[in-house]
Length: 272
Image (cartoon, rainbow, N blue to C red; front, side, top):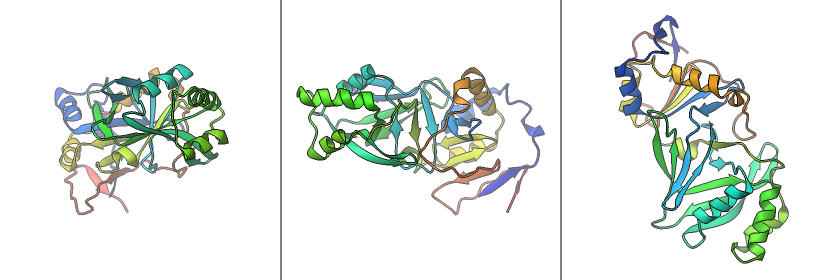
């Protein structure tokens, strides 16, 4: 369903949301992202964490692409790679290497999958009113050349055990030449939730009723995007080799598994 705003004058209070608007955001949204100069949607928070019972791994920048069917996360340093391996021991998690096709060619990622009673969680936007923790079955970390050397040493000294296929991929040295700076998420996490793209923002909602309630008060959320991009200018040109390169318009798109849903949206006009 596509809707287009009939006037921008209805959003005069975007930098000064009312208490009602704040409550609607808190009670109905799970994720909020704004698009940058590259037309990529970045979660407007630097407080994102992969979590399990042993601790957590921070993911500073998080890019959302609904056309992407994997979750791919950065490793900021060798030290953090060591922390990841400590956080997800092979005795409790399935740790291996997997190939991944990208626009720049095939690469190899570190893949971690949950086992029974050892869940993986992803908390997105910890400092936002609409923070939410998602349960994950599998996560992937992008590897650079330095990471391959570190993993090879772990295998050699016996502190990391990999299956035959993973060892073959380790020897292939198909890594990214530089460290990835941001995470990439999409259908792997958000595929079962209603999503809304509107006014250069992108949102994930708890359910269909939450989306309907939000549409009754639309002004509050835009200020969050403006504050984030003004403060963290390094996100303005953030790009990714994964996902679609199709041009996006500035119309309102609503996607939900139920195509028969009907919304009462005053002051909006249906476009072809």
